[in-house]
Amino acid sequence: MRDIILTLIVFASLPFIFKRPFYGAVLWIWISVMNPHTQSWGFAQNMPFAAIIAGTTILAMMAKPKEVYFPKTGLTWMLLAFTAWIGVTCVFAIGPQDPWPLMNKIVKIMGMTLVVSMLVRTRKEIEMLVWIVVISLGYYGVKGGIFTIRSGGAYRVWGPSGTFIEGNNEVALALIMVVPLMLFLIPLIANRWGKRAMWLSAGLCALASLGSYSRGAALALAAMLAFLWLKSHEKVKLGALLVLLAPLALVFMPDQWHNRIDTINNYEQDGSAMGRINAWRMAINLAADHPFTGGGLQIYNAEIFSMYAPIPDDIHAAHSIYFQVLGEHGYVGLLLYLGMYLVVWRNGSWVINNAGKLPDMEWATRLVRMLQVSLIGFMVGGAFLSLAYFDVPYYIMVIMVATRLLVERTLKEQTVQKMQEQEKEAHSVA
Image (cartoon, rainbow, N blue to C red; front, side, top):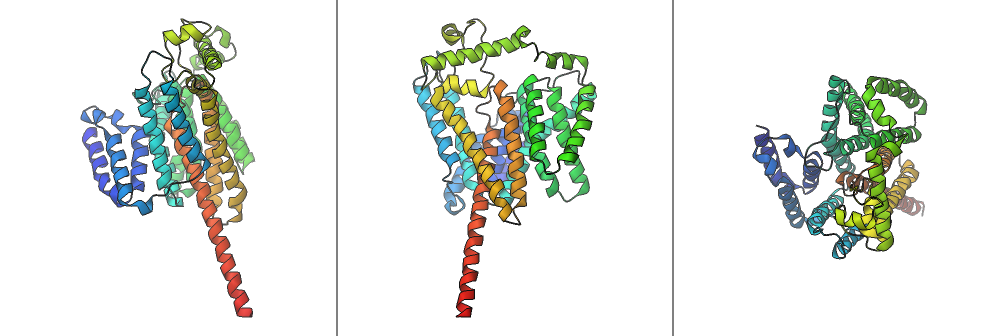
């Protein structure tokens, strides 16, 4: 039944994409982030929904070019440059495995990220993107939070199989990222029970991240909450709420959870932690030998580790977005990758400094603050996970830049309007 419902939803939505290409961007994010086909049990699991939606969206963009706007922003050029550089490093890849299948997947992610940026322009569209990300990840957060409560935290929360967030660490970080977006949406919900449901969902997402038993996610959650408090206009209320709820959540978790988290303090005795450090050192040594292009994609194997890892037999994935990019694409790739976050952060700071000049742009300031909180969570948690190509952070970047472009346009329109009013007044006086 789930397969039929999902298939009907996708195919029934295709005509609306031709009517308005932006709906294709929304549907794409839903399919790529939530991966609803993984929740089915039949033919829908193997249906190429993503390809169908992407193809339909591109055709709709070609049919309605007036609804397409290429954003000439720093993020756009950095995103294109980073993707192109990944292609260059694939040409010079040193590993025994073929890097091009993974490169093909990355190009699809980056390409559709660019497509989304070309279709979002208005406040309503920006808020729709936030909603679809919240719905897509919030489903697993609510589900995982309830599971954690029912099990008393005795079992780990896992993500949907066959996706970026399949692992317990990965889904935990994704849920941490979505909490600030939920908090942004709460004032936009008119219904009192709707607001309460969103508050409850945010709490369940946070609890589910704890229920994942992820040490990196625990650090990311702490960083996210600390930055959330700094960005809040109601520091006393939020601080009191955190002081009240955080101990309750920690007390709720069983002893085995605390034993797991406590290994952060004596990581030298933990095989998993030392394996990550071994992978990080491998990336540093590889980048020292290939500083410009790195080793290319698919470097986490016995041959590469035998050449560059301090412990050749301890083969691990990068377990860090930073060392992942460094090892795969060298220092040039790392600078491009970090440059995207720097550009986006500066866009957010610009909005905070300028949106206050517009009385009806308070929502933009709130949104940008929550997007920054979300990115802080990802950048801290990402230090321990191989999620450099995870699509949600790129969608958050797009939303941030789209918000700046909207504020810029509004400021220019108001400036032009004031100039016209001044000219009219001058003519009337004359």
